[in-house]
Structure formats: structure tokens, C-alpha cells
Image 1 (tube, rainbow, N blue to C red):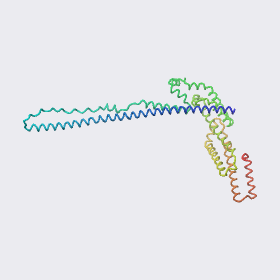
Image 2 (cartoon, rainbow, N blue to C red):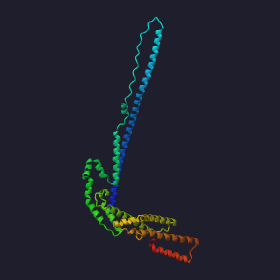
Image 3 (cartoon, rainbow, N blue to C red):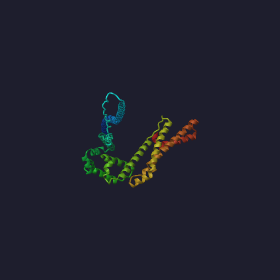
Image 4 (spheres, rainbow, N blue to C red):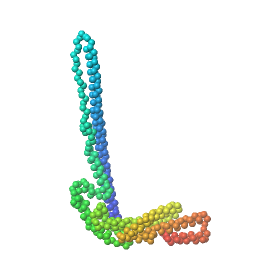
Length: 370
């Protein structure tokens, strides 16, 4: 039986490794696509910068033209006034030569009209860039894929999003997701019946039942997403059973670690006491966390017909809390006796009897440490 379980665990580990390798390959592919998109965006940014510089130069030239025209017209007016003044002076002086024919001076050309506000507004207005919209949609789709893979529902949701027919099928309850739920209906119904009618005599039976329950539900891609379609699924009881089994398993592991503790004669005494103190801290932390919520947890377990006596002081919790405390007291007593022996240079008869009694207590309570 253990070999079969090991083979199953190896198969699960191989599947997990293959899934992780596939995810790594997809992430590398998406990384390459992102690099390609970044290079395209950089080229677009450079082209937009060049276009912006060209547009600014054109606007600057258009603004300079009216100024140059005004300066030219002013210069022409000054020249025309000077010529008129010279002609008037020449007509006042008598001369034998006939006056030259008057030259007709044309008025300066009008300045070019300023560009219309509508035209300027159209050139300065923003325009849509389809590449930006496509890139935004691509990133949203990519983030959704990564989240779905992390939740274990990537394959079904990805197929629905990529194919409109799958979306219509999802609405009409004809999708692959609902088909899988229909196939697993019989298995889930049997598991629900077993869990609803389960009555446990001891917490060890709860631990075995949770192991069996996890094996039965391991075929589901997303347990909660499938079981929510079964209104009769006792979710509150299932969560409480798993919580109790996990807490009991942690306590059993801690108890086995405490019982398997052995002194190392070659190890210095401070290091030995440090190891004991570490175990004591762990034990106190676990027991304190259980005692904080023990009253409400016991009531909840009692209502759901889950064994709760192991959480009392007379159960496993009390046994663990007393186990290391007694051994710690014995170690402190032995350490004190050793210090007195070293300081006084030995023991008298009464002190030897007390020390032998201490050794006898340790041997009777912790025989595995000898």
C-alpha cells in the first residue's frame, strides 16, 4: 500500500514538474513577444518624435512669414516716402531739362492671411494609435492568463476567451467546463453523501477521512469552482474537518519530536539548553494559539459532530504542554546540582541521596533518553 502511495506521489510530482516546465516555456515565449513589442514601440516613439520636430518647424516657419511680410512692407513704405520727397524738391527747382515721367509706385502686397483656427486645431489634435490599443489588450489578456494558471483554471477559461463559440456554449451550459462538471457529478455526489453522514469516534479517524477525501477530489481541476455547483456540498463541515486534521497532525508531529529528543553527552550544556528552549518556545506558541480559539473551535466542532476532546487539557494538548515542562525542570535541577558539586568540591551523604532520587525520577519518566 505504501509503495502504491509513493508511486501516486511520484506521478503527481512528475505532473507538477511538467506543468511548471510548460509554464516556464510559455513565460519565455511571452517574454520574447514582449521584447519584440518593446522594440516596435521604441521605433514608433522615435518616428513620433521626428514627426513632432517636423511639425514644430513648419509651425515656426508659418509664424515667421507674417512677421517678415510686415517688415518688408514697412521698408517699402519708407523708400516710397523718400522718393516722393525727392521728386517734390526737384519740381520746385527750375531746370532746363524736362522732368522725368512720374513713376507709378504699386502698393505693397497684403500680408498672407493667418491660418484658420480649425486648421491649426486639426494639426495639433491628438490622433489614435492602434498599436497602443493592441498592446494594452495584449497585456490584459496576458495578465488574465497568468492569473488563471496560478488559480489552476487557465485551460478552461483561456479556451472560452479565445473562442467566441465557447463563450456562447458557456452561456448555454454546453461548454467543456460544464461537461466536465457533469462527468464528475456521480463522484462528487458520492463524496458529498459520505461526508454528510460521516460520524467520527476519534480524531485519528478524521485524519484518515481527510486523506481519503483529498484523494477522491484530486481529480478536480478547481475543487471550489466545481463543488459550488452542488448546493448540498457541506462546505462548512469540510473546511472544519480539514482544519481539525491539520491541527492534530501538527500536534502529533511536535509530540513525536519531543518524545524522540535525546541528550548528546558530547554536546556542551548551553547548546543543549538552547535546543530545549527552542522546543519549549515552539510548544508554547502552538498551545497558546490553540487555547486562544479553543472555546469557539470546540463549540463549532461539537455542532458539526467532529471530535474535540483532544483540544482539552486532558487530551493531546495537555500532554504535550506537560511533557517538555517536566523534562525542562529535571534538566534545570541536574544543572543546579552540577554547579553545586563543582563549587563545593563534592556532595555529602544527604546530597548524594537527593541526587540519586533525581536520577531515578528521570530514568522512570524518560527511559528512552538513557
